[in-house]
Image (cartoon, rainbow, N blue to C red):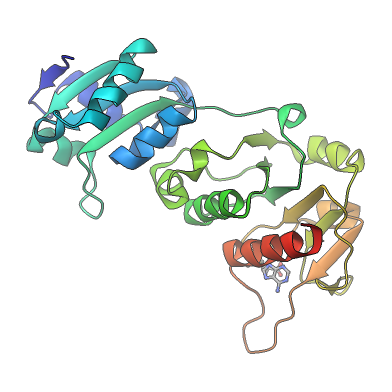
Length: 265
Ligand code: SAM
């Protein structure tokens, strides 16, 4: 199967892919970058639309590249075979890759999210590394989905996609406002649990985790907003026994998810 050969980093197609490192560009095009063959294959296997496939000439003979090419072309995408100079322009020094995929973004609506065991809602998550790590953990524990409430970092940034290690392709995500989320939460059939560091909390081991669980996590700096914490029926705390007054958001989410799994499943 043939791909168009591009050897100049100044080529317009290459510049357009590089531009997807900027949030504005991702928002306008609805596209994002996934780095590495493994992640590109995961995107394809999970049915995500591959818009551009870029690979180094030296891997062009691989069966997996051929099948990725077939998937790309079948969906109306284009494939580019490139040299070192082009890949250097697209790939990061700290994470050099032979294969880059450009996928179409996919965001679910709240109504479409599965509600089998647990959904994690994140209010104003700001660190893409945390968001990617949480997607990976949600995938690992077999939870259902992630909801992004209010102004969050971009789940399709290179950092978030990279930190998710391909789990972004497997975990449905929805974006919503605090008002819409509050209404969704009030109609929820199982337990609604917020994690918080204020007085009005119980030890996380004392709460009842009736399935499906809606787990609500706060912002890295400010925690949960007063509006949301005030509306949450149950607030739990992971005891802090040393000098640190809180855990990293992704770590706290991981501890809660495995605890919820123990209690429900
Ligand atoms: N200064 C912030 C506060 O007082 O809420 C710290 C926010 S913390 C770094 C980010 C989020 O992680 C929190 O909103 C909460 O969801 C979760 N978290 C971190 N440590 C926690 C703990 N010990 N108990 C419960 N939740 C915790």
